Amino acid sequence: MEKIFLLIQESNVDGEILINVTPCTTIEIARKLMKQEVFTLLNESIHYSGFSKGYFIIEETKDYYFIKDKNDDYYEYLKIDEKEIVKKI
Image (cartoon, rainbow, N blue to C red):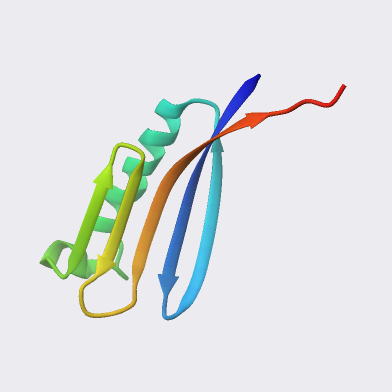
């Protein structure tokens, strides 16, 4: 069976939950995209400028990031899900 890897990003911004799913053909591509997104959040995002000031808690593995504001309900949850593609004959 063929596999696909989904990079799922869930964001809580001002109480609104936003979900973005990006399909990837390999786990390596999904991990690279996840690291790029985390880098952007931590270093370039105006909205999350507090990341660099230490106001956030970060939990991570190679296929998971959870970034939470210590003082508010803002968070970013990124994970990679592996799915099998089933083809109907």
